[in-house]
Image (cartoon, rainbow, N blue to C red; front, side, top):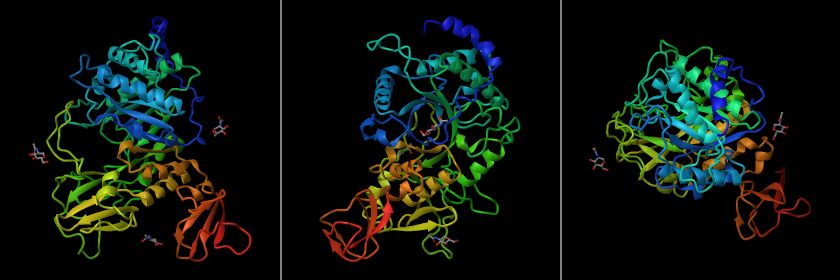
Length: 483
Ligand SMILES: *[C@@H]1O[C@H](CO)[C@@H](O)[C@H](O)[C@H]1NC(C)=O
Ligand SMILES: *[C@@H]1O[C@H](CO)[C@@H](O)[C@H](O)[C@H]1NC(C)=O
Ligand SMILES: *[C@@H]1O[C@H](CO)[C@@H](O)[C@H](O)[C@H]1NC(C)=O
């Protein structure tokens, strides 16, 4: 960057006067569907339908204490460079914003030391800007000097809390974090005054903690820095929590009020966070537990049961391999990706599992669950119906949109398609996901089938096959209105 000397000289002054412009405030009528994409296991970029995302977050680059410089953002460019380039190229060709996610559970090891030190903050900001700048070295440069990405997603998990075993943390983290954020925002405003580059963050269900470890009750200082936050409403219950329970409850089990999406939005709002700067997190996976009672025979039936506090191996891809950046204890996660649930449990029907499993629905948290009596495996997960309720919730609260962890866990874009209903007004959504009328198909039961034809929605009045939907005359189809 030609003018980097001047830019750096201006940085400290700009940071002090970081009067954040409101100009970049998000246009709340443009809704977001944000996919976290983790190219760890191969690079399944071809499975991404770029028409169904507004943003894709590359997860992750790391704050890793084993890096050559542990206080700048670490990327193994030999391995990741070509993937980042390809994702940016494909994203931009399809009008999808590509964002660099920094940190995550294992990659937040040195954020605390960076945020606490003015010289380290300055170097860190410089390492972050490289993701946003254009590459001026030409296409053949082995390591470009800019990656032309559209934003930074700063996923420090978590300021002021332990997080993963390898992390450092202090009571001053949140205060220092604000300084780091102000400095990176100031630098972005300086270098890209007209080009909207965004700052987002994956955050917990309650705001950042103060020096005493309590969630902030006033987050207004953070509001102008962020374009939005991604609230991670999943992993609410896991092997660490007793009893079993929902992975991603939409509403809270009352008295005492439990965690949920609804509660998270209320808590963040009460601390002064605007709803239009919230993307609601959803899991494209379920979590397995080993119950110590038979959940099929209890009265009343309930998704809350005592369990072993050790996750069993979940779906076929679930692994007990350790993560090289930070070795924590060896254990399975208990993950069942949605694709695995569809390929092994809900095979022929979304409602009726294969033999051995029973499916239940919790009408308070609005989440389905499964139980397998042979090994007492309980799985809390999300399906098309529970996702659809989350989309309705996001729409009715005027949220920015939704995101998922993580893109490649879906089955034939089923859940992603549901999240895309956020783009519809409720009327437009009427036809989304409804199959077109099929000339050869039998529609047997009256008023059950719904089809689209000629830009309208139809239902059959009686048994029919090959009868083209039309509004006039003797016709098997009833017109339910425009799509
Ligand atoms: C916000 O986005 C909508 C939809 O793209 C557009 O019609 C509207 O003009 C935008 N508003 C502003 C203030 O840019
Ligand atoms: C990991 O799981 C495999 C079974 O899939 C098991 O054989 C192995 O012992 C486990 N590793 C550890 C360290 O527990
Ligand atoms: C959930 O509860 C509401 C009222 O409390 C009821 O109207 C609805 O039918 C229930 N839904 C299911 C799927 O049980």
